[in-house]
Length: 171
Image 1 (cartoon, helix red, strand yellow):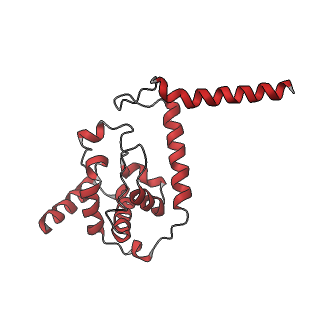
Image 2 (cartoon, one colour):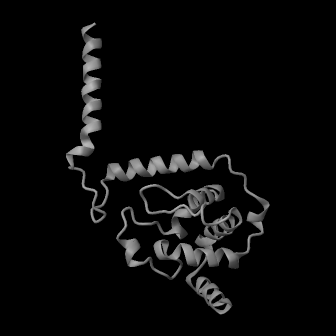
Image 3 (cartoon, rainbow, N blue to C red):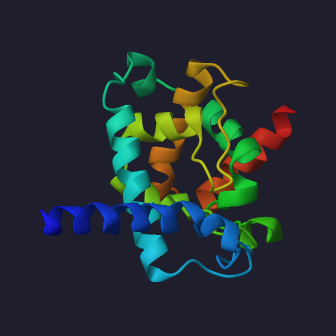
């Protein structure tokens, strides 16, 4: 019985400490200070598994396979380049000041399924500055963008530049 009472007291004290932690002000929330290795692992793992779970019910529509690369490019160039950069184009200075810094999608998207890219673009990711575009864009637009993003690893800076030139002429 003493062990059980001790366990209950220990649990209550631990819960009280955990719940009071935000009020101590000791956690540095400055974006100029990188996350610890533990925090990077924790939030990365949390995000990966959450995206995997919540995107698992999404069905890849036939439009994904016929999505216009030019339309996908236009959306990427408008919505994503400032934070994520593009082949041959660096991220903005603002993006470099974000914590966590937005990933280079031409590298990080390789591990994502198209449905996961769609889910991320549509819903955003909390506490990363990744906005939800689901309220301002329809699913067709988001699928076009997702299709383009999945092709980013194969796109050279020259090809991206050619697409940019084509897009600029159409404005």
